[in-house]
Length: 514
Image (cartoon, rainbow, N blue to C red):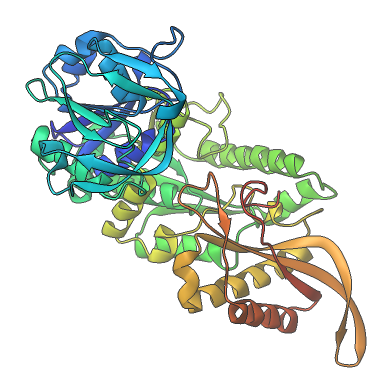
């Protein structure tokens, strides 16, 4: 991160919204780090110079001995604290209040909130809608705390000890269902913690480039470039810092979308002048996939072969001391360890063999969320086609072809996929679709073209809308968009007689077909 001293600790007690809380804080240009409650002590919090703390929610009851608890000394560190949901109950419990469970006090979903005059609720109306999700509630606030918000069922929807800057809300301000949730977070950051807006991507870029120049002085760096946003932004940031001492290996396995390999090569070796080795290994990958129909086996073959190709190219180079990866902050968090020493060596390069020796690993984006990575990419001059590239599976089109993968099927699918994406992007409905693509099934059906009977393949079109890809809704595209895509696919691509649209959400389906 930057050298700024303004940073918030998001102390995680198992809440499903821990990343969302951190993102809401960062959207206000304040740096936030997520740490599991068990991974940091009150003494370490002071040592790390955090400016404030947010306790997350969690699925447990504070009076259950097996539930997450924390050292009550945290309340006496002199730092502002905001407890959310379980975090609010935990604050009450640690400070000597009473938390209990009662069926008639449970609240789930949108609830009318009444707030009093308080720094936490500056510019929040006396009555508004909040999002509740709790069974337990604060029956009696601790000594020194006052109730500052209520709902019909919750006598203590928020409380504070203003002398110690301790605040707690039973509802979830981080979700969009709470009308003034972002304002409440903003008030905590700027009215209570009195922080500055120092977390900005321009600052991040300059500070990171300076830091990388120092730590990588005189060293050669190797990066596996996929063309995805994370590895692409990491490549340009590293090139800005160390120039020609960076080498990128782009393994083109022949499973990319139409013209994608050429775009990657043109962007990085052309526009940016980065040392790029493009390995055209299409035939090699297709030979390994011959006769394979089982999805998981396809993935394993492609992943292992990628490693072998990368390994061969790495051994051809002069001494390379450092491996670079495009690991981002959610990868670090989801590894279960938020500490800086953690390295997810499998994340971007498929799991490198232990016998490829590097002195160290550098992950220049490990502090950033995906939206921040995209912002950095734009500021570094990456084209929008790469910065806003849709999520694309590592095995590529191999898992969008049902059954055996062949060159003929890849050629058909590339064209169908390109047409569908083109028609969506030419319509105004692209903003409502987060991921859209074509799938080539192993189903054949009868068709009629001219006066002749045909027997061709079936293509499935898939489009979903989602915030986090944990769940997704199928996109209700207009009939005219689907009609035009279908007409073009069947008319322009030989061998396709039928086009269908997937209207299954996630769950029960996944976004991808394999």
